[in-house]
Structures are given as C-alpha cells and as structure tokens.
Image 1 (cartoon, rainbow, N blue to C red):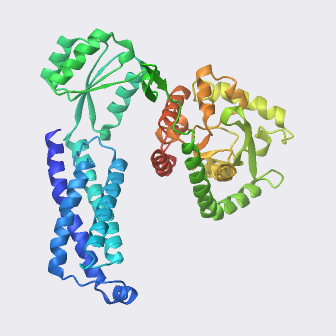
Image 2: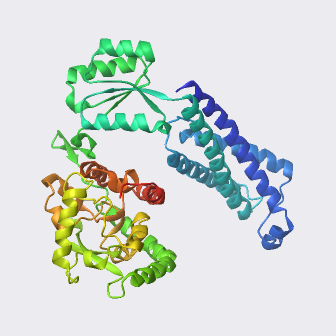
Image 3: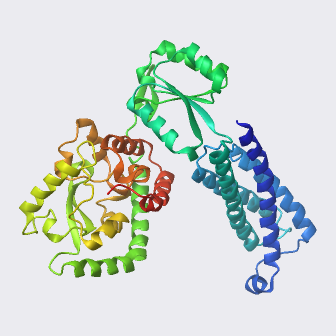
Length: 473
C-alpha cells in the first residue's frame, strides 16, 4: 500500500467512527422531538438514559468499524471501485443492524424502538457514504494534481489488448495508474533496471504470448520484490470452471453462464418489476415524444419496429421511436424501401465507424430534426421497456443485431445469442457505440460468464452516466 493510501486508510477509520457515532446520537435527539414522539408514542419501551445510550453507541461504532474492516473498507487504494465501496458500506451496516436487533431481543428491558434502529441504520449508510464521497474526491484530486498514490505500472507484451490498456492508462489519469515503461518481452535484467530507476508497483503481462519459463521467473521476481503481478488471460482462462472427480480422475468442467436455472428466473423477475416501473416513470416523456415524432411526419409511424435476432437465433421486433425521416426507414412498410436499403449500403461503405460485422454511420444524414435529439440521449429506445416486459429482451445483455449483421458473425460470435439481448450492457457503459465489435464481444462474453444480480444493478446505475457522455455519431 502506498504511503498516501495508508494515510487515507487510517484517516477513514476515524472519520467513519465519528460519522457513525454522530448518526446514532442524532437519531436519539430526533426520537425526542415532539413531532416524532407524537407519531410513535405507543412504540414499545424506551427507558434508556442518554448516558447509557452514549455508551451503547460507542460500542456499536467499534463493532461497525471491525465489520467494515472485514469488508475491506479500509484498503483505501486510489484505484478502487467506488460503487463496490458503497455496496460494502450497505452490507456492513446491515450486519451491524442484525446484531443490534438480536442484542435488543435478548435484552428487551433496555428499550424497544424500531424507529431508532431503522433511522440510525439509514443515517449511518447515508452519512458514511457521503463522507466517503468527500474523501474519495479529495484523494482523486491529490492523485491527478500531484500524483499522490499513483500506481506505477510496467506493461509487457505486444498484443492489441496490452496496447489498449496502455492507451487507456495514459489518457485516463484519474484511474490512478501511470505507465513507466512498455517492453515487448520479459527481460529480468531490464526489469530490474526499470525498477531501480522508477520503482514498479504493478506489472501487467500479455501472458498468451510469453513462454512459461520466463513467466515463472517474472512471477518469482514480483513475489520477492512486493510487486503486484497481473496478466491478460486467454479466452479459456477467463471461462468459469468447476472441479469434479470422475472415478478417481480430476476433471475441469467449463461453465457457460450463471444464467442457467435460478439465475434466469431471478433475472426475469427483476426485468418484469423494473420494466413496469420504467414504463410508468417514462410514460409522460414517451407521450410527448410520440406527439413530436407524429408532427415531423403525419403519414409515418411513430414507433419503428426493427427486426432483430434474439436468444438462440429467434427473430423478434425491437421497438424504437422513429428517428429517421420516413423515406429512409428500412422497413418494407416504407414505399421507398428499396431506395432506403440502397442508400443505407452506400452510407455504410462511406461513413461507418465500426470494424467488423456491425456498422455505425457517422453523421447520419437520414435523421429527422427530432431524431437527432432522441438518439443522442437514447430516448428513442424507451419503447424497448415493452420488449423487456414481453420477454423478448432483458434490461441488461448483449445488444440485438439485424439478420444481415448476424450472418457476418464468425462462429465464436454466436455466443452472444445464448442469452436474451438487452437494452444496455457492459459494452454500453464502457464505450457505447464507439467500441469496435470485437471489444464489444469480449465485454459481452465476460458478462455472460460472470453474470450476477449485483452486476445487473451496477450496469443499470451506470447507464445514465454513459448516455450523457459524449460519443461519436
């Protein structure tokens, strides 16, 4: 751990302790206000004095700090993921609340106040999270402004993935990394010189291109010199697996996705609940957009139904607000259909930004005046909440593609068709439509192999931020 990270770790312990105590004591004062007492005057026993309450608060705060430590909340790396930190705060506080409720159940003569327990828990989560936001912002400011806590990285390899990582680190300074050198092959003598001159915190290696004997020597060197060793795995190394024994012989079973069995059921329940909520929430916006789209052309449909390929190659219609001028819409309902298809092929050939079977036309001249706005902020995709409710799509998953695009897939690309397509996904929060198809494919495969309900929630929360970020058009 860097010195600045150690400082923030120690400081965060004291800040968390003060905020926890303050939140619980504030609840005590809030409980004794006239307004609250009039609402909960018949709520059980409450015979504890402030002095007893203070002693109990300090004890609970110490317990909370210990649980937070077990949750890894004091490993304050400048490169940490902030959303994971908030989740750990929620999880740790919930554990403390459960312990408190068990304690009060066993010693009911202390007091019985659901208001105090629930309110204190909510305030602890909120105040500690706000404290973390401030600390996190200050740490990032020191990182970007003065390089405090930056992790010095040596990159080894010649592959496209290691080059991509190098490019990202050198442009996104706020991530907390700095490339001190990038060498093609493992050379321990050269690495020792680089370490002596600059100091190395982490080494990232493109392993598939390196011999095993050199990898072993490099790993030993990292262990001896307290350097973090990371590697870019091959596709097989990223696959989930399960160890089994068959008649005394060890076997490794490559697992496809957690979305088999109960995972699929849980995801479907979440899709129904959230899509229903989003349909209700966005209905005023959809109504206003429908009127504007109709005003653009009274003779054209408001919703454009685009045939796409879903899970297991099944065709379905994706609903979108029409954002093209009607004469350029590629649907057979359009009297100008043949010319629209011909014009689209010309645009793909001249102006497509994407590499691979998927196209993305830059500065598409077919957009209507309202369509430019709708697509820029992805409002055109709001009708897809109905696709999710029906079960054609999921909220999160790989984006569905057209038949002519799927026909250009290589065989391994068809893994994208093993689950339901989604409105948003890993690719959308990582670069939206600006990613090359192969990069998008690898992100979607990672999602398929490592799905969890928490991952879906994180992607959904990050999607609005990704939508608001600028992108190529």
